[in-house]
Image (cartoon, rainbow, N blue to C red):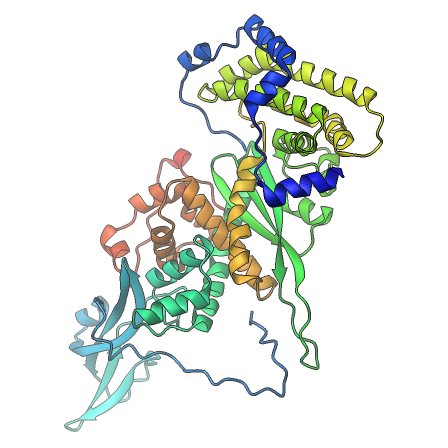
Amino acid sequence: MEQFELLKRRIFIAKAERIDATQLELEFEKTKQKLDALAQQLGAGAAEAANAGSTDQPDAPGSRPSGKPPAKAKTPGKGRRNLAGRDDLPQRRIEIRDAELEKSGGTFIGWELSYKLGYQRPEAVRVVLARAKYKTPSVDGESKPLPDDATVVEQDGKRFTIVTAPLPPLLIRRGLLAPSMLAHVIVQKFRFGMPFFRQEEQLEADGIELDRGTMARSVEEVGACLGAIVLACVEDARKNAFCLSTDATGVAIRPEPLPDGRRQPCRKGHFFVVLADKKHVFFEFQPKHTSAAVCEMFRGFTGYIQADAHAIYDALFRGDAVEDGDAPPLEVACWAHARRRFWDAAVSGFAVGREGLLRVRKLYDLDQAWSKLPPSARLQKRKTVLAPFVDEFFAWVHAQNDLTTQARGLVSKALGYAIRQELALRRFLDDGRLRMDNNNSENALRVVATGRKSWLFFGSDDHAEAAANLYSLIASCKLHRLDPERYLAEVIRVMPYWPRARYLELAPAYWAQTRSRLDPVELEAELGFVTVPPVPLDTAEQPSPG
């Protein structure tokens, strides 16, 4: 009956874990008066906290299998789209010249044109890459090797060499899509949840022929390449982060077909999200939701880890993921998870659940009043004011647990969770930078939960890993108030030139200062060569090599 009442509320009323606070205060008036008196005695007035406000410090917190039977005929591809005749599209022309060849006497004779599909809000554009062509006289008997794109012609009895300016390095060398269109397609899917087939229909309505297969292959390749930036962020977080907040959600992975061509049912994989203070957000795909996978993700980290009470995290706090002699990370529990169990009991008609909600609400109200204080002042408030309320809460929990006669049920579940997690639930009192709950991690996972309703599954583990990299960069852009589409377009543009040891400079946390050191004219061009700036002399403000 408890489960029936809980499911009935979730289905017919609301899934949100809300409850009438006024009704709680009326029902448990004596408890409320006792808590208010304790707050007044400890000097926890809201006005006092508001007047002491100050700026806060950062809080911690491949190929795709077709799956078709061999007997079924494969649909022929349409080939690469030819944009040469699309004069109706807005055009951006980028000219590439060879200064060395011009100095050595080469005669300019024209341009070699190639086309890519770009995007400039609010419409698609045709990007024309014009590479200069030069004619140089050939010397008889000269054995100097010719460039790959050079040709030898004869004119009026003389031999000439036709040389084209070199093609700039590109993240996807022979792709149809320019960096701006790649960024647009990625953001449409991984930020706004629009699958490729809907983007294909939307572009077709605008007169652009771009099939979903081209988008899928290009996006996967970009996601795999940008994974080097995410790995640099992960290493930086393991070395320097104060607290890592994590959570996970399941996704469907489409397996390869059987040898006889029959399809298999989708298997389950998991996306983990990790928030490293207010600096990085990164997603990681794991085929298995196991302790071994979690230990590999957090190997070498010895700070605070905030997570739910799932058993897979127990190995972390035992020290299985640290070197010999290092202390294991400290567990920080989530008060929102503890409150959820009291809410389940409350909506099922139990007075203990409703009183537990009232007590947890008081803790949140007090801590929220100090949210704008610096960590040191907030810690002092927590120790002098909030700690007695936490002691009162757990004393009540233990007393109620002794009175409970049911070995099972929602009340026993709520009280037992609080008792088992008491030490970890008290952990936020140790440092003013720690949060009471892990809600930020759960909020970050919403983009995966909403997106999987649109595209249902990922084509393979490689696709999921590439998607995790793109999710990471988009979430970090939102954290640092960057436009994800502009950031991705610029990073796709400059990454082929960037030294591998300095990939951390391309992370969203450092992109504003990295971008300020780039040539704005070069960066504004859709394609073309990019000059990599040297490492600044003031290395204190720069990330360490990844």
